[in-house]
Amino acid sequence: MTRDFKIVLCPIDFSESSYHAAEYAVKFAQQANGTLVLVHILHNPASEFFHEDGHVISWDKAKARAHALLQETKAKRLDNYAKTECVVDTGDPHDLVVKLARDRKTDLIVVATHGRTGLEHLVMGSVAEKVIRYAPCPVFVVREMVN
Image (cartoon, rainbow, N blue to C red; front, side):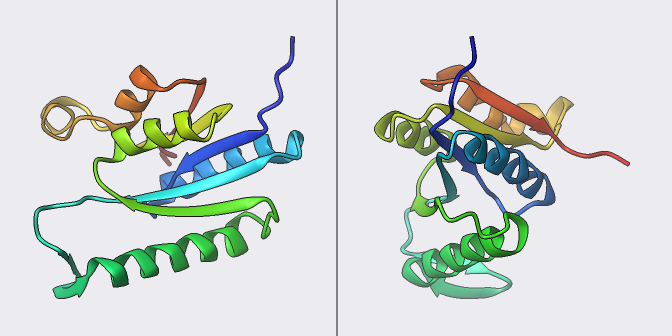
């Protein structure tokens, strides 16, 4: 039995690993002539400002910048696939990815893993691991490319 993935969700953190995952995600979406949803989640601390490169910018500017980077990803890495939506939100990454997948009735989530192990994994947790655990649909995990 084959399955069409009409809605494919791919979280992007602007790392090379996440770009690699997006390249897989667009192929799944193209096969079904489906929609690719690229999503970037900004962590939402109590303050209303976001720190970047030693500067403080408002959340609105941070969201606008992230949206522009998603559009750039679509253009430069995904051959400007026409059925691509770009979503930027604030909050806990795994919670929002799972919620968005439920709300959009996503058929597949394609997520990168950075392959953290040991103490770093225990302290940081794994967004990919939590998405796998709570996702309402299949999850395709793309391991970090190691040379």
